[in-house]
Image 1 (cartoon, rainbow, N blue to C red):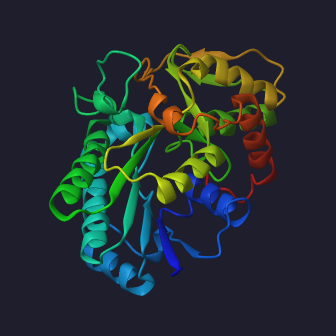
Image 2 (cartoon, helix red, strand yellow):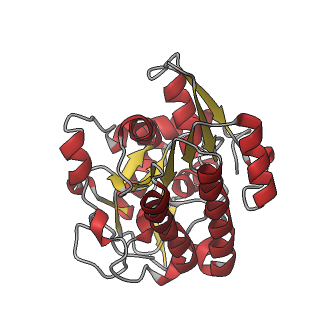
Length: 316
């Protein structure tokens, strides 16, 4: 059996860190060498830099996680930047995979690519059936184009390129910077500061929007499975079930309690973003009926504990 060389772009972030942990412990295989790239290893928005990375490591497999990402307000304020950076990055990575004859490339999409107005729950066939929410229009379209690329490279050249669509991911090693963070890391960081100052946790918006959340290590296990076993160019949703959907208010309450804040939540008038973007994991369940997801309460506890322990050194 020849050695597989798996190159993970965006390997130092939330999902990359979880994959590294899982692949070095419970999913270790002797015929796989894993390389985790961070932004300091080269600029994937630059074609020459991307080619140089591939020439250096000569991967047989690629897990493409790298993206320019941000929360609601970051996206609203720079739609062009998010569009251009992600389009360049994806174009460079996917085309270089083709040129370098990479055996398989699995890219990571996001549930924000789904149409804003849709019938719920949404499934894999819904992706292109309507406009994404205006708040992250640029990012969403750049991510949708990966699905187009996978299909046309498969169609024209027989490339084994595919994508996975996770719901909202959370866990250790997240981006905790309040100007860039997503909802759970933002809440945890704010709760930490509120606790220090004897204040209540302030929640932006009504707390009513609904979300599905997947723990980063669960997503890691599923992405490793997809890299090894899932061989269709059509995307697959990696998400907890529909009945695991929770409101932002419920998550805020759990975070506030885990941080030991005694005061009640305070809601601050602000934009809510999409009310819901419920997806079904029926396709995944059809293939992996017995996969066990980490309950939100348990995953949140691990994440809050990690943040408290790593407050001084984490990305914030």
